[in-house]
Amino acid sequence: MKLNFLLLALLLGCSNVKTSKPAQTPEVEVGLPTEVVVEIPKVPQVDTPKENIEAHVGEGSDYTKPVKPLPSASGEFTTNIVTQKCSADYVKKVEEGAIYLKRIMNSQEYKKLVLDFTYNGKKAFVDNEKMTNAEVYDHLIGGAEALRPTLNYQMDLVVECYTDSFSRTIGYTYPSVNRIYVNMKYHKSYTACETAANVEHEWTHKMGFGHAVNWATSRDYSVPYAHGTFVDKLCNKAKAGSLTPLK
Image (cartoon, rainbow, N blue to C red):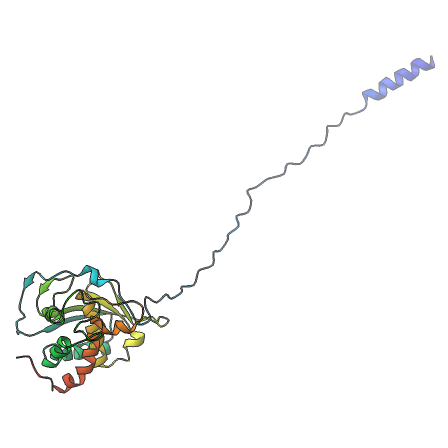
């Protein structure tokens, strides 16, 4: 009797027990990883001078012989120099230098310097494109630039100014353009005669003559350097109007 009562009580107790649900695992919101922005540091611009003095790229290899004679209206060598992005002061020096250049190129003194020029005891320029001194003279007086191969007895050139205070390059040019680029860091202090000498040097590159990139004694005897020296030597006489005109 006691056993039956105990069994009955046990059965009644089990029926009142609430079955609890298993605890749910909370949902964890998984998002995309935070984007990390990595700032790439800017590489500082390092000046690589094309050349310590001036930079030129193989104009000689692009030399083209003149094809059509076209005498100048005055019968003399003249200049057609255009300036771009230059200050009024520098433009004035270019214009003054152009006057001296015309006097020099049309003088007996200049012709004599070119014809009598020697290197190592021979009448010849270094990097002369296989021209004799007389041929160099005739070619320059003819004024047929490599990119404008017409004999017009005229210097056709564009001078574009720029300023790079950190560069050691005074000026440069390319064989594909009839212009030179001059660094006003240096050129702003040039005299009209120094400007004329530099323009002459650069213009001979446009006429097809090159020179060694690295300095060497022989480089001073190249057509560009020698003619810049000629102008420098004769400029004061040109300024004074005391040169002997060509006959």
